[in-house]
Image (tube, rainbow, N blue to C red; front, side):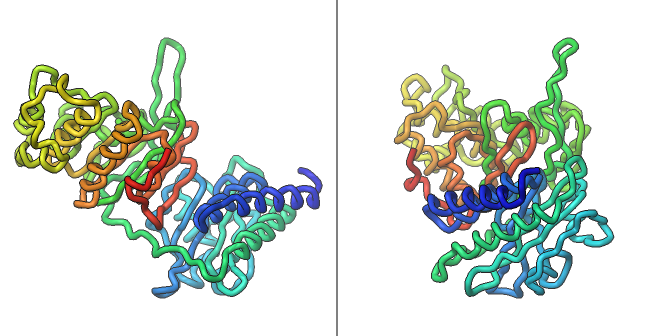
Length: 406
């Protein structure tokens, strides 16, 4: 390890640069945590933010790591996180034992913990919450020198918050509709095995807009296919509304897709010899309680185009027809795979406004994209990296589609 004084100097410089370049409080906090993790060498880290309007319960605000903490919480005084918040004294557990801190063991289920550091997150005038750092069993335990860096940087990040600024109220997720545990997906070509998903743990919540973000090849589309029943995991558990689909037959997956899932693809996949209305009615015939096809076209603003064939419509209009086609099934969840990738900026915003309208009506939507700007619309953003969940953001200020710029 580097000389501790040099490491602290470099870490402080990196943190100062992040805070100085941030344009919002949320950006400063998220960027600050990333800088701390990168410079202190932690596997995972969480900012727990206290709900001052309620009983002070600590909720996860932003975290880096492979575990979905969305519904986790700590009461003041309970577990290492709660104790640190209440006492305002850091805790260093270099030889982690789950009996020492049951709450933390639960939080990081799926990632065995070897060591942990919890640091107060306190501004000049307010006790904001706790920053928690965790290393897995494959990483060396934290040292006192590393913990010193974490404490100094967490203190700097908190002090950077201006007294008159406050985070928005935390997003409250609905009921869990899907659970994915330790999901892997491998593809074999001869003797070569390619591991695309390497252990994903994720819940999908009723009524949320969830974005899966990442570079090509990170596994986001493969994960979407498993969520939609178009593909099966190599291993792991997948359930929908409590029903285990981990070992579902092809017929069971077909029934699941038909009855519950609407799809929007980058390529519109419309039947070229059918009108917009006929494309919708074809799908409506497959389900028991479809939305009226005319009504679905009205929702996407294409009533006047119902007699047009795909070749008679622009790309944006075809994509809106594909959205209406997904909607006509009355699905519980709509899955969208790069729905704006083939569209120009103006048309993309028009399509996103339609999707925004559907989400606000209560439909759960999961979207795959590589467009960072679209993530501003989401309730949650899961950034994928190398087949795993890398970081999760819960948006406190959701942007409107008309406010997006790229």
